[in-house]
Length: 139
Image 1 (cartoon, rainbow, N blue to C red):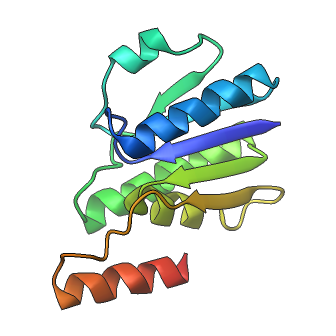
Image 2 (image 1 turned 135 degrees about the vertical axis):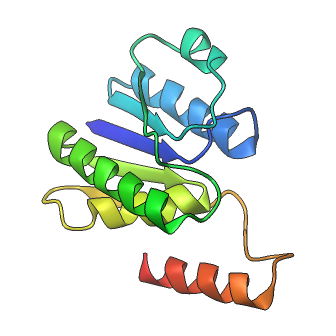
C-alpha cells in the first residue's frame, strides 16, 4: 500500500514522534511510505529514519493561517497526490489536515484520514475557534 503522511511542521514534538513511529512500522510491514512536510522541519529526521521512507517538502505549507500560502500548498499537494497516486493520505496537525484532505478529496482511489494529536481550538479567541471548527467540519 502507498501511504502519504502530511504534517505542517516536522520538528521534534508529539505528533511528529507519533507519525515517525507509525511510518517506521508501516515500512517494516512492507508499505511504501512518504512523509510530506512544510518549511519548518528538522533535517536530522532525514538521516535518522529508514532510507525507505521518502520525504517531500512542500514550500508553501506553513503553520500560520495564510490564505495565499494555503492555496499554493493546496495546489502543490493536489499535484503531488495526482502524480504519486497514494492509496491513503494520513494527515497530522490541523493545518495539514485541512489543506491535504481538501487536496485529496476528489482524487479517485485515495482515502484521506486525519490523526488528531491536539485540539487547537482551546485558548484562542472566539473568532479563531469558530474558523477552526468550521474548517474542520468542512474537511
